Length: 365
Image (cartoon, rainbow, N blue to C red; front, side, top):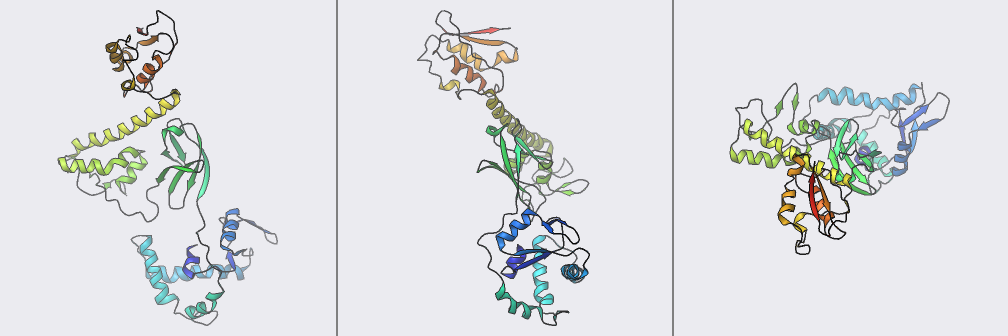
């Protein structure tokens, strides 16, 4: 696609060397079985795919000749590159200064002049690029993570246990779709022309200040963002700028900085776990104790309900049974316990009971 864009058009035919990305099977004397995605690419750009004949040096040599020319000229002249962008910049310069002005060995013409004569025969580029991303079906785990090629990525807790589709791009981006809606996006570190992170990284010694920019040094040079991604510490990664800025303002050393950084990760995981467990609880609605109208039910002991909200009965391994006729607020109070900051995920059951008409909270062993 980049070649088409560089030339400013599309040739009528594209010759490939039977690589698996384009050709699935091509037996000698038999028909060519092209890869469906390569055929789709040809249909999008309007070129006719053609494969080299097996064991025929004439077509294979023509296809590989340009590879050898670049290898023995460009990569001999330039051997070190700071990034893909730097490599492409040097390649464009090399084309202008060396490759295009040369006289081609076969046609005996200057390459730039020959191309200028043939360029009008190229087909028009389509209005949009071909989408090279892969789509794969996935089942979201109950912890609201989805596994993609050896890595696990977070998605909204509401999708826990649900099917979805993952879009995987060539530059390392992963996007999860719920139907046609994109609900989560992640980028695999170390792919593409990702600029060096401006985030502050940890050094090797605890005596150094946490706000000193740098890299984590280990067996190899690894940026902190990449390390956090590999350790699945995405919550800290998302808050890293703020955490480092706070550490810089407080002039913290590593022994003081690390607890704050790890707490940010723990809080994020805890909140995600809360959301997942609330989904699994299948509560009829979400209600907090602050929303309960005690004036509507004056017979309820406010003090006792407030004490229940402290969840002391959970620590004591006690069970709370709410008794009362329908419509007095038992479900609301029960849900508010499950919604409590430290109680989400604890078991809460609602039982209808007829006693003396007044709701009671009865702790039992």
